[in-house]
Image (cartoon, rainbow, N blue to C red; front, side):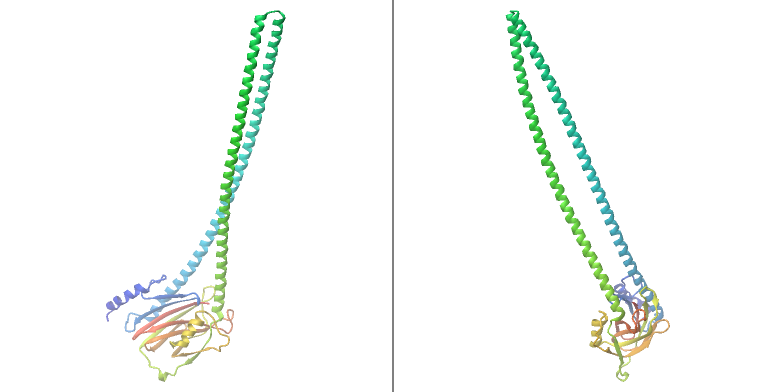
Length: 391
């Protein structure tokens, strides 16, 4: 198979496996939150001389580190988004308070204006009443004067002039009574209009108060709903934080330990494939660290290992009544100074690669930490994998 043919055969696979910010061909990145691991894996033909295991592992290390960095940036972005949301809520609350103060001020000003108008109306009514009284006094004085004149004419035996003046006095009385009745009707109409205006004002105020009360009630309900949502979100965030803390603690010290037992090699058929790997341990601060007693095991898939992987490793739990689960392995090796490992002569099949190390004493004294991954080995293949775990 030529290099050109191999490239064409690998490219479609690469298109399917590229994700999570991994730009290199054929790499499959996998993240597990419960175990706090990120792994990268690729498979190449063993006869491809252009593929160098150390070079491919270094490229995959870059991919894994990019993924770790991306996760940190996403977490930071989430934190910034939460801060912006809190600031927006604070600004919204401040705006609401300012609007409430403006509304209160407007209501106070409206009340003062209403009081001023009422006072002005009273002054005008008093002035009108005063003018009315003065007019009535003038009319009475004029009436009295005419009556005196009438008496004088009668005393002077001026019958015709007295009769004409008497008729005029009677006419003035009729006009005065008519005006009084007209003023009374006007007063009644004005009173009725005031009553109607007052009723309308009261009705409008009642409707306005009702609308304001409904709006206020709706606002209170909305604020209660938002407050409830925030409480639920805060509670959920706290639960997630506690769960993460529990998981982190569990990751540190609670995975069920394994007792590794070598399978008799007489019964094992050696193959023609290879497994190459690199291990990255990160301390709680995210800095690379080296752990003591780091040993790598290659184990065939079994029901017992599947049970350990699914019920202990992925869930970070242990069973105090167990004295460790026996794990039969085909081969083992140690990490070299570059934190790499290699297995040769691997037969076709499915395997677990399990890295066992010792936690630093400041994290978990006398406890083992594991990284576990399932791999599938084909004939004449180089399987390369990078394992990253944050303690």
